Length: 209
Ligand code: TMP
Image 1: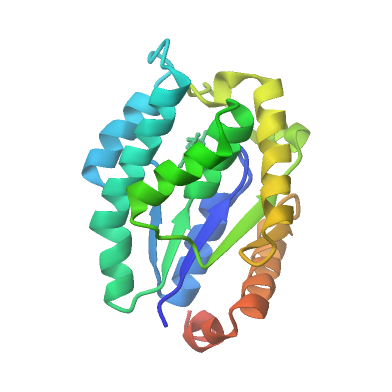
Image 2: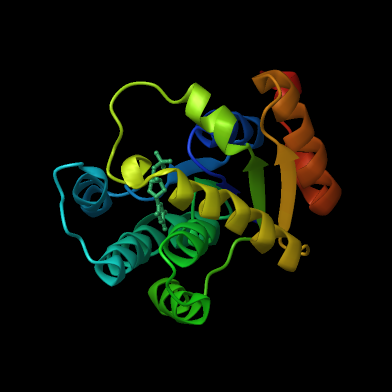
């Protein structure tokens, strides 16, 4: 059965590295939000560009939802329908953490918008790479994009928000300590997801790598 697995976490939590490694191991389609389609790439530029000033919080949420609608229609659903596992770097959890806990928008509204945008497609499992804010700050280097530049209080709410989301829906979330070296995180992620979704072991390509 084709599975939809999502990596979530705050800034510099290691999602990109770990989601790529898992996708390779599973022979899965790897994709990301925002920006997993050509339309989404334009939306990502608009959303993350530090020169985008004065973007209203609701407009931000709707642009994330627009990216998601296009991405689900063009990439995620077709891949799942073709029997491929999909590993995605960010999904609805990011909207709940950033626009919900971070910006203070209603979680009920955001879930409703996300359900509409995706035609009710939810991840089989969300992997939260938990990294404290101090570690993210230490890892981050170079110029900050618009969201990275939203300030420590915002990012603190995001990190705490993720922990709350994972606690509240343990059936669909696993939390992995993202502060360890990448190989250790990879092992912990594999153990966590195969404990939840044992059918994935059959797709393990690690021995063939
Ligand atoms: P990243 O994918 O490179 O981590 O950057 C994406 C940024 O967009 C990150 O700051 C989180 C943010 N984001 C949201 O605020 N809401 C969303 O729904 C998604 C998918 C991303």
